[in-house]
Amino acid sequence: MNKTALITGATSGIGRATAHEFAKHGINLVLCGRRQERLDTIEKALSKQTDVHTLNFDVRDKEATQNAISSLPDAFKIIDILINNAGNAHGLDPIQTGDLDDWDAMMDINVKGLLYVSKAVIPQMTERKSGHIINIGSSAGKEVYPKGNVYCGSKHAVLAITEGMRIDLNPFGIKVTAINPGLVETEFSKVRFKGDAAADSVYKGYKALQAEDIAEVIQFAVSRPAHVNIADVLMFCTAQANSTIVNKNV
Ligand code: NDP
Ligand code: 8X3
Image (tube, rainbow, N blue to C red; front, side, top):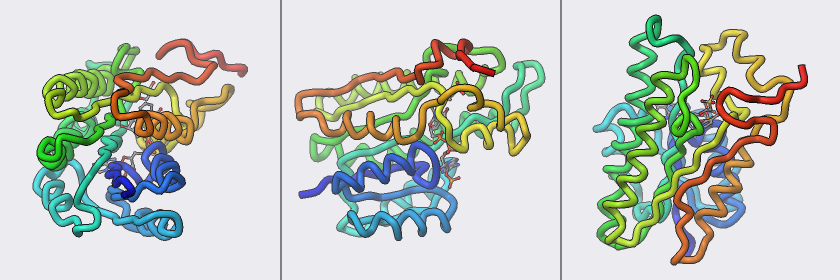
């Protein structure tokens, strides 16, 4: 029987590319996000390849999250693979001038949202004693960079939570993976800089990772044999050495 994957943040970037990659491999999809039009478009495109169901909820809302996942029809109820991907950076400011609303957004979405979705899915995995959770962290979860403060904090938390999940879910045979990319050319910088022109320069002068590059690694992780768990992946584009060193030809 085909597996079913629930992907948060499936309306854009890494989540959307992962939906396309999984569809190629016949994985059934539960696609989540807040932008209904995009969910509809992706559902229409991928329904030709696999079974697709969409859920519209904000991961910050714990009741809405629980209700949406509980509402899944029988054909999509059993989640074999959970991709905790929804998230963004909001702002790039020194700690002394950072915006409280930005801080709330990053902690509420990247950290608490990931927990709410996991809480709604994990019980069925522990009951079945099987499942695979992939948390999309970041190189920012391994290294702090100037003005990255709270975003880096949120991604360090994602990494710690991932390691905690791997420990606690170990008796149940559930795989837990962290995928930690560096710079990926998505809508990430548009969100971070709130549409400001600063977003335009982030991926200029070098070839950044593309969302499809991450999706391929996610597909690799979910297609390993039962005894193999890809625990932690750090991915950079060739031009990037770490969070602050990027070889730009400009
Ligand atoms: P995008 O901005 O392209 O996608 C973000 C996705 O998250 C969208 O689908 C958006 O959907 C969803 N999302 C955001 N807020 C919420 C919310 N409150 N509730 C539900 N869904 C939400 O960015 P990326 O694809 O780049 O980012 C995906 C993940 O990858 C994030 O966790 C990010 O931190 C991480 N990452 C990104 C890197 C990069 O350089 N791009 C590098 C390393 C990690 P919608 O708006 O429809 O709700
Ligand atoms: C996204 C990569 O370097 O902008 O997590 O934080 S970075």
